[in-house]
Length: 148
Image (tube, rainbow, N blue to C red; front, side):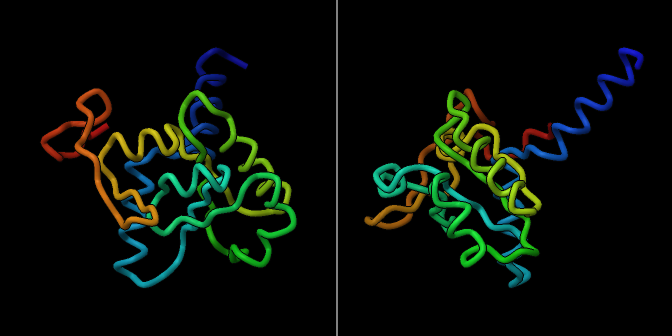
């Protein structure tokens, strides 16, 4: 395989199985507008982490519970997106692997909860839904699309 062919295969595979927080936010917004739950976002962290804050509308399903609980919580036809804390954590990768073992279409959200919050998307906790200011190191503070 040539270097170019290998690069094409590598990057195509990454895009097939990874997504970023901006794309997840756009998909969730489109699903809400259409009234169709086409994407199910799964938080694979502990209860304590979930309670501290999570993506609004996400399903809490720790990795160790996916095999037993996913079939009753996540529709088989849904596209699943897993996340954990952030780029320094591979919990979302392990969760995605568990969903793949069950035959789900699944992607890992790169950046995790950290980048979701840092890019100013809604964070839900027991005290309600909040948004943090956009971190200039992760997204344009003007609110415009980064066009990447």
